[in-house]
Image (tube, rainbow, N blue to C red; front, top):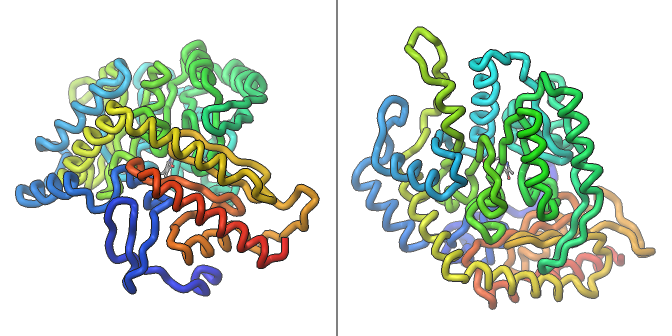
Length: 431
Ligand SMILES: *Cc1c(COP(=O)(O)O)cnc(C)c1O
């Protein structure tokens, strides 16, 4: 907060497409897609229309015990668009809750099928699933969760593969090491393991850490072999970010749980969904006195305004995918990214997949190093801000996550200004 308060506040007043305007009229490209939610641009006429239409009908009515057309239709659409085994959807209002619900359903399922000892959660190195206690326990992020370890439930983690990709060119290492470690945990803990939780394809909050193609399939096979649920956290990657609607559907994986949030909301109103299978659903069926019911509900579960926007957003993202537009944008983005990083000093890593990219700025290459308190990542983002570009750093890594509808000229603007911002900061610090 000390640092934050020392930086002039930026008050964003309005938006249109990929652009945001502050209260004094400056314009910024939203290179962070408003924390990875904004798929279709700001102030989208179609999303506005369905939202206003729904406001004219009803803004909130409980989904606990009642239903409404927007929620019912969204559930049906999600089931249609996701892998075949996923037939049921539970709504909530953020990614952390979507994960909490998947974990609790998994734990209760094992109790209901008389295997209550299956309680252990296994996650991947660097995993981030949200900031509530269950999500923190399943995650593996020292900086986000380290201080709260003492209050978290037991979990285990396995190393991630080491994979880099730019423009579709992939180099992957340590894939076997990762899968062997998971296999070894699952075989040691086969009686106790309830679920494996991972962010498939890209671990966004860890700094765009990638998995090579085929990795997820192997991992899913291990889960099946050891009778452990597979929970896929597609809160970041889902809804078009990688070029497909869902990673699991693109890789023909049938998880036991699929968690969606950020992109599903289109950056309008909070909504999340946890999809699951008929097998899980049926285990919870019974007469009232069986006590099998799932006691979990959020006040704003399935909010009709958010549900209507999500439904329209899914149709529009499907349109971008089916027309080939998203693929063309990703292609252009990959080329522009590759050009932008060539010749930059002090880049120790760069990865891009779909419409997400990262530049790791780490001192090295024989060039003068900097200290943690130099805050190079933050300084680069502040320099970018002065050039009309909003980005978010993760320590000294710069994350680039634009709306899916970004135009080629906007991509050029983004990388030209990011490159200038990096060069300016390096010069200022005489690195
Ligand atoms: C953002 C995020 C979450 C948490 O979602 P919230 O809506 O912030 O609770 C979980 N998993 C991943 C991969 C995320 O990127």
